[in-house]
Image (tube, chains in turn yellow, red):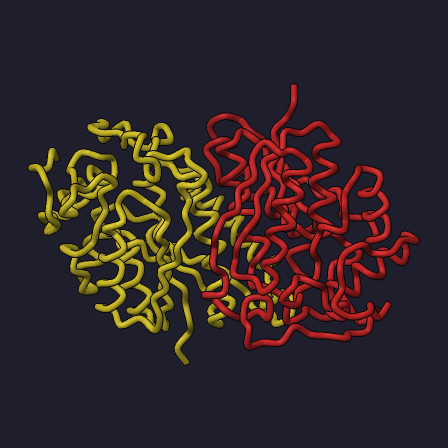
Length: 234
Length: 234
């Protein structure tokens, strides 16, 4: 029998690959995206295209305006996204694009979605290697959330559901993720990674997110098919 | 120096008392309420009145439409709120008013609010005794969330912030909560507890939430000053 799974689908490279992997593993996918007033809302259209391409059972785009809290260059148009950080510096500090408690909020809402859709699994594209220094991408954070999920819910306490947070990208490099996605038919021309795209949705090519993505394509021996506003730096 | 604290303020009896306690303990209070498409949205006006009465530093009412997930009589107008449950049966099962992962979602958003307001404390009115059987009101759930908060955030990982979830009502009976609130100047005529109020915002007097509240006033030797649509049953 097909198992139900919630997939956190931002529309970026990692989460779209995770969605492909869950479908490939024969999960019935309930995809969840967030309109959180992010400056790169163009990713939501990418998420819709991925959900359609993979024929997921349901795709919910939930509005949750995290800009009301402030404190992040991703949701505050007055704070600039850091640019031209040397690639080797990435991960050594937590960048301004950190959104306070974002993955805690996203996983919590994914848990609510999972409980109502009879899904025991929540798939998320966190990554140990190319993780940009975000604290809520680390394996110890994921383990703590899984523990919480199994105390928090009616499904776990009354029905014996055992929630698991599935992190298939955790130990892959960006290049490995891209190669796996290509095998599974991901069209990376429609995925959106840049935190600071232009009006046409073209990537800047110089923010941390772009640098990691471009280095990944280089490692995979491929050219990124997504549109860039400038010639990529790496 | 005054410490900053986030208080989860629904506008009900418990959370309003918690807000009074935090102010009494000389915290600078950042109150957070949620417009989650709950059927008893009248509580939000009560929250606003409490925030005003206690002169909190900031009161944020965040829209997050949990009815999109379904699965609860509190957010689905087609599911009836259970009524006339015998008082001694309350807590023996998880009622239909359980909202999937609600306190996980609320605490996650409170954590984002706390991080951006330099607050180390999140105060929440969960209660071990009169807790209606909700899994996300138990002390083990609260401890697991506190553990998560200290792994999830830039404040904890980079700045050494140590978040704590403060639960001053955990071991109090409803009667004790009310007596403490009266001492601290809470006006319970403006708090709203009922899950199924009428058009005028008057309490039904027969849902679980009303039964627990009314029993609390009885135990405290007081009459509930809030408006009821019918003569209360207890």
